[in-house]
Amino acid sequence: MAIVIAAVLVAVHRSPVTPQQVDSGAASRAGSATSGQGGSAGLITTPEHYLGVAEANEIASYQPISEFAATVGRQPNLVLYYTAIGTPFYVRLASEALAHGATTFVQINPGSISLSAVAAGREDKYLRSFADSVRSFGHPVVIGFAPEMNASWYTWGWHHTSPATWIAAWRHVVTLFRRQGASNVTWLWTVTTDVPGITGPIQRWWPGSAYVDWVGVDGYYYYASSTFASVFSATLNQVRALTDKPLLLSETGIGQMAGQAAKMADLFAGIRASRVLGFVWFDESQHGGVYHQDWRLEGHPGAIAAFRRGLATYGATG
Image 1 (tube, rainbow, N blue to C red):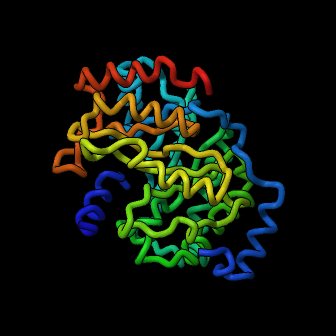
Image 2 (cartoon, rainbow, N blue to C red):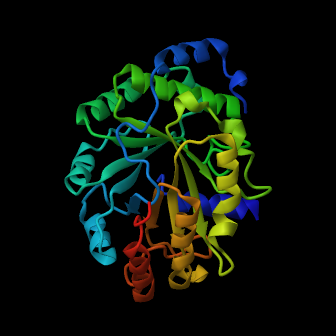
Image 3 (cartoon, one colour):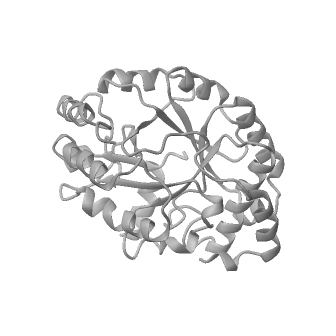
């Protein structure tokens, strides 16, 4: 079962410890660069503020995001895209998002690059270029790096890369961006929802409060039995025992097989009760079993109506 979940969740996520385990010299150098850093780079941190979306082909055209906005009756204010080491910052997408009142959210995936190489500085030329582009953009950008490391389906994750190496790489990336003057970045540390036997204890990958601005939690409704409590609550409780940083549901969706329309009210109620910053809807169509469901709202009138009902009061008490 673990192998099946690992394989299919890689497709869903279109990519597309303990601090003392980190090299003390690297920690010291990083610490000197983080003095006075932190926060959310000017972004609002009230509950129920963010409606985010991730769309297929959004890098080529903003049209899919505009279609989502028309479908749900509201412009998203957070636009997620995925990239890999070696790919530049998509300034055009970020500029289009800005023009529509949205903040760009980038998940940088290492791909085949080892985190030990990142921690050792062997990708610094690329990272400096990316950081310089983000700094020159001059508006808030949310960035995550090597997400869902508490699971085993990525090479940088559990059972493949040690938490100490992951932490060293994360700290190195954050420190490099800060030294390049990219103070407009909000750093989002992203875990996947806890699944006993498939994911590891999230605290092992915690890089320290000085290196994190927000925490992201990725999770999906796969089954008819899925609820906000069963999908998210255990993980949200673990995060809040670890840190008081603002929380975002950084990737979520309800599949057709889970009863998308019927479960929408539960998602919005859970978001409100948990007082998270908001959520990013994974608005993409997949077909191939319970873990490859059609997550899109478009084409599903009942789900659209339910989503709009949720949005009608979304943020009203945030």
